[in-house]
Image 1: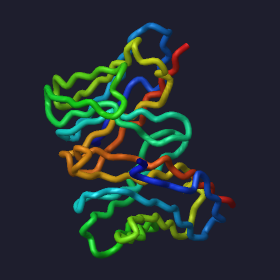
Image 2 (image 1 turned 30 degrees about the vertical axis):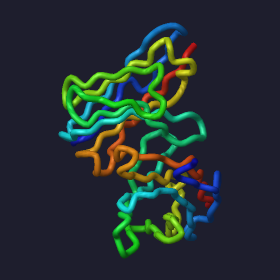
Image 3 (image 1 turned 45 degrees about the vertical axis):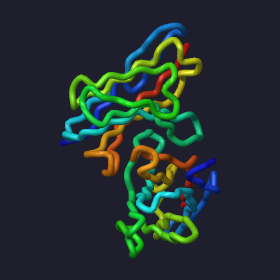
Image 4 (image 1 turned 90 degrees about the vertical axis):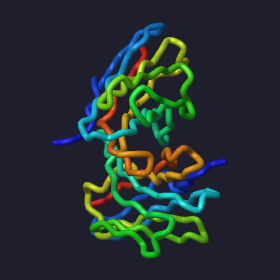
Length: 112
Length: 115
């Protein structure tokens, strides 16, 4: 079955460490996205990518980095520069910039 | 300014009754799409229904329908015959060209279905 796989489901990080969240899709979608969700709130766009080797900052890109070396993969690195990284992170993809999103099941990151 | 407003942080509905979740939006684009997603406690986002700005008829998908009033910029979700499994967060979202075709989400409404 086609879909988006995010791993790990739960992640704990010590302050000052970088951590990378995985997002893989087998839907052959061109566009991929990373969103952050804080408790009781909506989703905010971190980064998005329309095609391989290209990505754009979203509304809250500071403290995050991404890469898009393969169509299927769009990993997100939460760097030590991100002041408040504890949140739920959702990856999504769409066939192009006009199609609806398919979401992964999310990664819950906690800084300890 | 808020592009998507959902004024109901929480809603309760009796099982088997209908419920309307409100959504208003703000855009100067003529062409845009409106979406509703459901987020159960497990966290995944489930697509429910889509309405294009040029669609003349209200969208329907099973028990879900979208009450689209373009002049009022509202896109309310109607769930008929509520079930216990409908208890979740519901997000209204919009896609417009001005925002690079990226989605902007509302703050969500938590729906609780009572037995």
